[in-house]
Amino acid sequence: MEKMVVLYRKPDDVEAFEKAYAEHLKLVEKIPGLARTTVTRFSRTLQGEEFYLMAEMFFPDKETLKAALRSPEMAAVGQDAQAFAGGLLSILLGTEA
Image: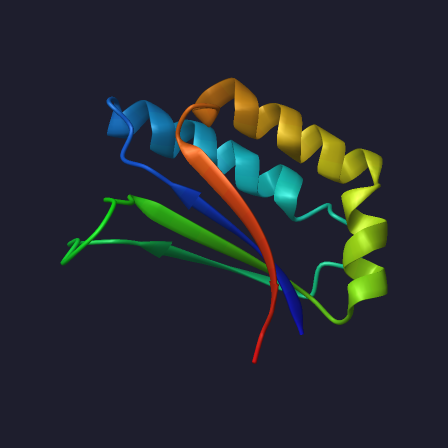
């Protein structure tokens, strides 16, 4: 299983972030080939950089992920993320072991 992981640092205005993120998830749901999405809100950082939220988007294989990355739906998701959380996010791609 391939996945895209987005880590968000804690926003200054959590309420505004949560409102924007709820709308953002509606765009994420439209990404072609997306098998499932999980969202984790962190309650405590024990060591290292503090993160507020992690989104994991799962794809069945590399080809499906590559196609999704090139899709207009993913472009819309990226533009939206930059608009409400541009300075807060890190994006990673990986293979679930």
